[in-house]
Image 1 (tube, rainbow, N blue to C red):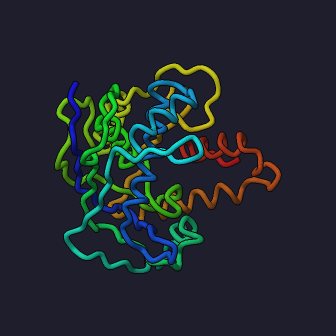
Image 2 (cartoon, helix red, strand yellow; image 1 turned 90 degrees about the horizontal axis):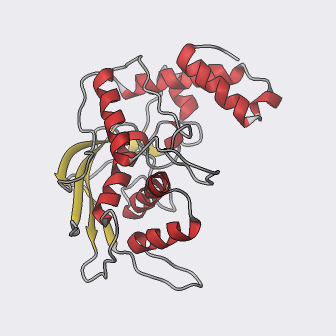
Length: 278
């Protein structure tokens, strides 16, 4: 099978993105996107092929390059980020939304790339690069990483608290034979649920897995994706709702119990899905 040479999508920021360099000045940085794609590629790879550290490193090196005492190899792909308009980072407004401030604690005084900002993310095979044969092709694997990043991931500081959420506004270049495409628009929770399920199925999620993995995967019984039935028209109202529930949940956990990861997980799951307090 021949190699597609490019993938390109126009992304829109959905929740404030605290992405920056050493000075913490909010800016679009290709290395940050490269790191995020590398992370989600690992999640996809382990889901698809299981966890074998040596094989994982070998296949990862074919795409993203390697460095170290065992020898180095240049990346096969080039990641670029471009915006037609100059992005103007600004502070987030928290007026009357304590749940939002709770989620953003630690970055609440920093400037962010604001919701609505658009830019192009492109990944291309490096000119002149020696492209090893891979199955599936490299751009199919990159497509899987982009799907995961935009559907269930985030980018930048506090991304696990709801910041840095992205959606695909337009698909510019994408392999025609991929069994999944980025989620570009939905009009209801039902449509969103169907799109997420279809995408995860195309990625090979829910397959059986043996043994323990030291990195996340989408294998059966190893992940959960909740799509909340409560909707909000604005991102800040949605995150304020989540932050308020999270703060309420944590206030109800004794300190010793809070440190028990499994107990915290079960309690959080029941609180989010059924409103049951610990």
